[in-house]
Amino acid sequence: MPPVLANLPLPIIGSPLFIISNPRLVIEQCKAGVVGSMPALNARPASQLDEWLAEITETLAAYNRAHPDKPAAPFAINQIVHKSNDRLQHDMELCAKYKVPIVITSLGARTDVNDAVHGWGGVVLHDIINNSFAKKAIEKGADGLIAVAAGAGGHAGVKSPFALVQEIREWFDGPIALSGAIASGGAVLAARAMGADFAYIGSAFIATEEARASDGYKQMIVESSSDDIIYSNLFTGVHGNYLKGSIRAAGLDPEKLPESDPSAMNFGGDAKKAWKDIWGCGQGIGIVKEVVPARVLIARLVREYEAARKALALS
Ligand SMILES: Cc1cc2nc3c(=O)[nH]c(=O)nc-3n(C[C@H](O)[C@H](O)[C@H](O)COP(=O)(O)O)c2cc1C
Image 1 (cartoon, helix red, strand yellow):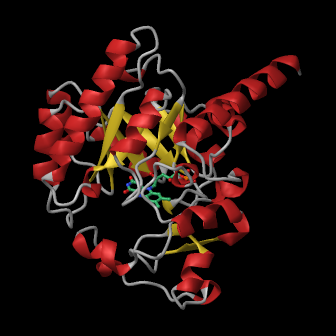
Image 2: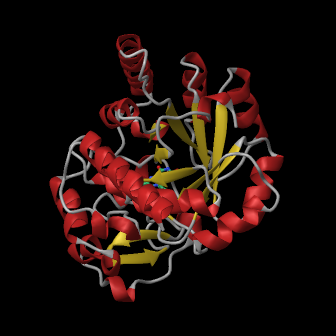
């Protein structure tokens, strides 16, 4: 296990959320012991990334000076390594400036990006939806994998987490984070029992006070369950899970969505505008009953995790 990922306070990574993650959420996650992350693209204009990285780095350093016995978890920055991301080089230079400890790469694995991160001593986790992409990512130099299973919010795969983790563990003994519908402490423990090292949690953090999502979005998560989630490729060209209520509100019938044109895939400026009101969400949010500060959500996860551990030890 790379040192930055060894002995984390909790086996949990708060996943990057397009538009929604921001320095406030990342800082609260890290202070509460969860690896906080955000997409570099959330900083707009691009120059804002410098300010955000300074804020995160300085706040966490001050926190660690004040709490040497209980330091914050490290943070991660997500880079979309797709050809439509014309900011990649700029954003990577800023990650180098701040020596970002963990870089999460999505939508493409690139040796040059991995080499650059290793150059400043960082580690790369690459997200994949099947075993062959996992092999490619490791061949290209990623240090660890994020296995995105069925039911994950945003772009999601279709594999059962049991199948995906099992197949990767046959040949890979490095770090694996499991993603997809994890929203309870029991599910975090299950991910570890399955062979993953970390649970990778996204949608549950949308319903936190710090998340940069509208009140309507947060409330819809509180009121929804897995029956209210639909899997479609219409909105970005790649299949993902979305809240049916937001699709209805946009005037579409979620049960009768057309297939999309993959050439329409775009993560540049237009992506934000085109589907701003179509809300990504994973299947695990049935357990999310209220909008709370991130630290309260994390405290619930810890309570449930410890209770699940005790229950198993007794059985
Ligand atoms: C609204 C939303 C936006 C997302 N944006 C990104 C992103 O920008 N980059 C990325 O790597 N993953 C993104 N994801 C995927 C998450 O990082 C993660 O895989 C997923 O949220 C985990 O499943 P869960 O939501 O069921 O916990 C997004 C997910 C959601 C729900």
